[in-house]
Length: 147
Image (cartoon, rainbow, N blue to C red; front, side, top):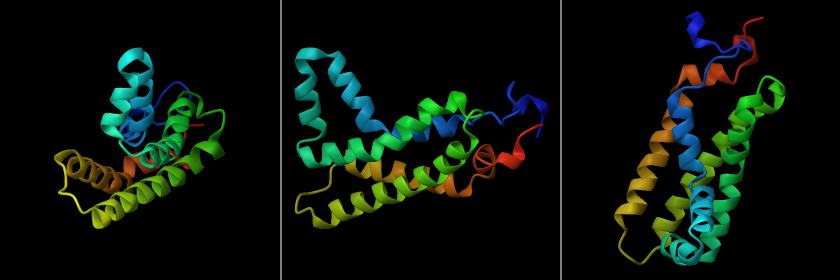
């Protein structure tokens, strides 16, 4: 690792794919904020993407850890134990999200939409990256911090 790979606090810089995965996992929260900003069309936007209120609330619940990790990322040097636990929390959330998508596909009588297929593929790719990226794992490891 190069010295440029570390920030001012001696922590590894987070890769671009980390931020992409956080946005993907917190997509319900992102849509909720966009719906709130659009005022009149907000409820129409939410009902377009989440016709079932239960799927909206499960998306909000599963998107809470990525949203909190996003907020914590700038101050991860202050709470290293919470930051380390965030890796496992996000990994568990990705497994649950992927399992719920599979369950929804299995129970669905309708034809699959392209959006559902695309989200499932993106979630599978995010899960694979999360498990296989040594750089990302090192960002959550306290031993990789410069002293």
